[in-house]
Image (cartoon, rainbow, N blue to C red; front, side):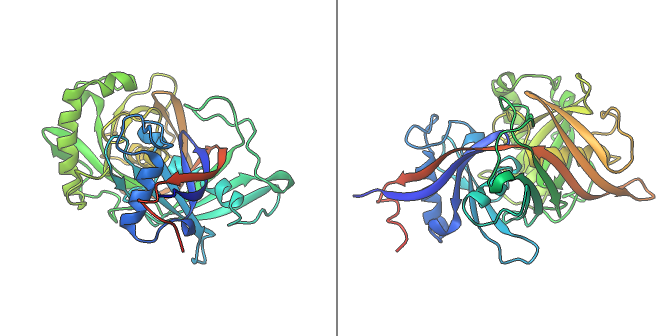
Length: 366
């Protein structure tokens, strides 16, 4: 049977990578869509040997774009996290790193016109309802990928992409503190279940007997830690109103420790069944919010915060550091009312063309 060719852009977005599709080029129904994405990525094999995935959760991500019908947005960004070794697709979360490439991809696809030396692309994150403005460098009428911006975990320097996140509080659960509490206790460990851009169960590293400075490889080899953490994550999902999350990558999990290299604090972020090699953009926003909020498990850990808005929160991670600029208002009780979070990322178009999926999976549109 003839294979089906699907146009795509292959892009690095932040410290993640994957195919970017025009949503109109993919099947409408979710079941067939999942089969197509798994075939394209090669899900179900540790090396994704029969697809274009990279054998890691940060390289099996998919972005699907379309012109938005919303007045406040130019493009709809629909995200899918395709599993590496399992044949699964999760549409519940979003991804801020892959989002870094949405502005450039939308321009490359002709979904958004260039408006000058810099083009602002207003993005609606379909999975969570959040709105993001991406400022893309577009001198000479085209996307510029070369520049001086550094992203920890990505070699070299590239053109900066400014991301400003709006409407991120309660992105999935509808509440900042998804359980109604600043701190819950699960399996004897205090945790903060917070939802800013991404629902996360947050704990202190020391509560697990960790330093918080372990490498990704050291953490991934710690099977006892993951067994305990996963049982706790499942309970956190229930407490956050997400139901049975055993087949979902949300909520994520993170552990915090004091900084060692001049940042605000150190974090290790889990995806959730392995340690992130750097730090998720969505995760960084949630952890920054946790650091600013009194009464959470982070209280007493952050160093150097001014207490004034906007606050720059510098998060140390396994490959370096990520900075989040948080705009907020603080109430009389000290509680933080978040307004927006901004980050500088980069993206690069790696390839363009057609990805092939077996005709037995999908015969194509028309």
